[in-house]
Length: 180
Image (cartoon, rainbow, N blue to C red; front, side, top):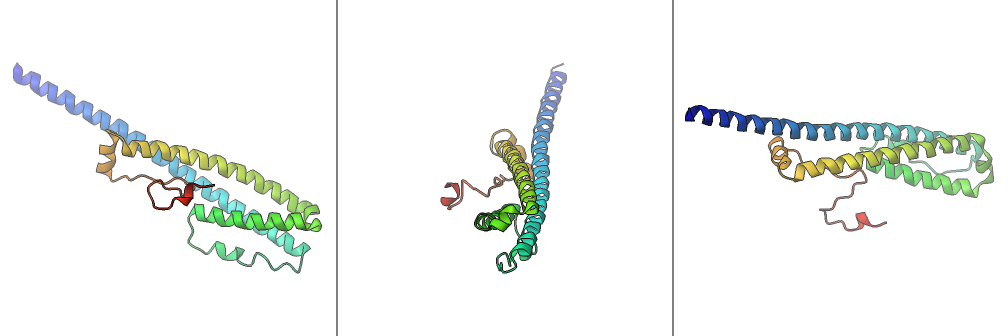
């Protein structure tokens, strides 16, 4: 009877370990799916934003034929950029457009440019919301990957911490990436 109890106890312990493993594995996989979904959504929104910006630039060139800005906009799509870098480049171009728009009354009065600019602002809002969701999912994922007992499973599966969408990394040498 003692051997039966020991075997039963071993089976129960192994079963509990396997159930715990499956539970933690599923939690990690759920966060990975959320992160991947948010990444693809951000990527799609950035592509839409790029298309809107190129339309705005085309309209600006129709209104202001002497404008020689925005020569490198077409080259951006050919570069190997992360979504974060792509967003930064689009923000720089947006800033140029905004400055040009505020300096030129013809551009300010263009209903096409204003409509496109409104659409761009709407996309920006969606991007920010998706980035927030992405960063929250990364936080949950990183907690699972770095805390016991899920860290053991993450080590077995070779999962590593992920960086936040904005590219900020608490462990690198760059102290300026947290400054505003």
